[in-house]
Image 1: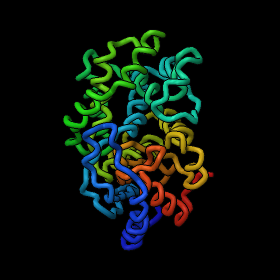
Image 2: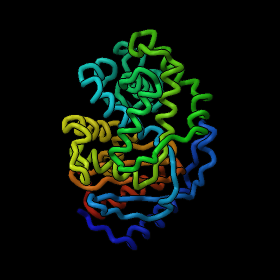
Image 3: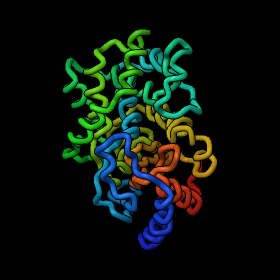
Length: 308
């Protein structure tokens, strides 16, 4: 445990919030434009009801790309590593998260599960006879990690994403042509946009991060929610690919497994330590929360959280 001081955490939030002025709220998904760019909140969960919070922690936000970690966990549990990694690779990329360029190589197999193409391929592998069953499978996993049975998805944001998912449709059709995706594209996009629109708080996110950080074991129930080897796979991808094409710099500056989303959410999983959930919707040029990055860097330096 790092035994956070609440007052100190609040001071760190206030200092990091100053960075928000240099960022912009995501606008390519119309429903996300409503977020207040000055918002910043953090929750640090250390197990056994020990959760330190600061900022506007009552704010709910959607997972967006953070959901890629969760869908990967579920797909690996459902299908196994050999099947999943026959459809998606394990290598980082310096290209933007929504790039189509690398799909023309290897052949047409996405480089990793944290870019959009890879995440779509992974989501297509979740077990279920219908899209509703697959979404229910994913939500049940989130409920178990957080202990919050009320988590659902934001229908307005899901619909907004579905209606504007032109590039993701292109990625899907390209992969379907090459046998990476086998299910119907529109059904997959309907599921994927709902997956990205799963709505949480910083505390929910911190609790998910804690399960991943602590080898997949739920501290309160004692249950192995995620098999040990899969939890390690998730942390590895979070380190190498979790912060889009800023992952290398993030590893140097912060040095903990983390995943961001364009809603401004960030989830960190400090191995054998706390789970951290952050929300700051003002984004930098790579699509990461600009104040969230500053806050997590300050926290890592103060408590020597880096794994390197």
